[in-house]
Amino acid sequence: MNTSIFYLTIITFLTFSLGQAQIKLNDNELNRLKTAVLENANKTETILSDFTQKKHLSIMEHAIVSEGKLAFQAPNFVKWEYTQPYKNIAIFKDDKLYVNDNGKKNILNLSSNKLFRSLNSLIVNSIKGDMFDDTQFEISYFKNDDGFLVKFIPKDKRLKRFVAQFQLQFSKATTHVESVKLIEPNEDYTLIIFNNRQINATIPKNTFNH
Image: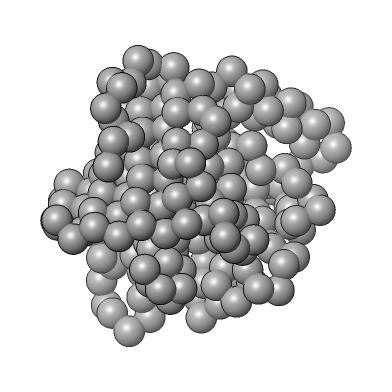
């Protein structure tokens, strides 16, 4: 798999918050949010979730909508299984990305490139919600009707060529990540909304086979 295909894969797999009033968190609210999110992340061993992905392109009138299932197992096993409208699978495992595109398989070694490793960490940590690293991102925190919205702008110039900003929407009730919005430099964006989430459910051993 070449570099451009990898970036396209990452952008396809990443992703929102609805257009609501956003109020910046004060210091006490920010600290409470960060504490709750990090506690959740530390207690999370597995995640099973359905998801809906919406890819918004400026050249298209309507979003490209896909559906699928996510499986996560600590520390860094992730499986994205797209079920509608096409069947595709991507598995992040042992510093490698395994892609099965309708029977056509590719493998990419993530450990051979620092940027690839950073993108992989971004994926894993965005799923868990554990991304409060202000050495890598400019971070701003807000509250809205649905909970909390956190916006991240990468500091790495190479990463900014592919990701202008991404946003995590956290549930007001559970402080789990409900959706992720990835905004590209040309302002196209990908939105993934999670639903039917199960935390620390048993995952079959063969889930991450490839």
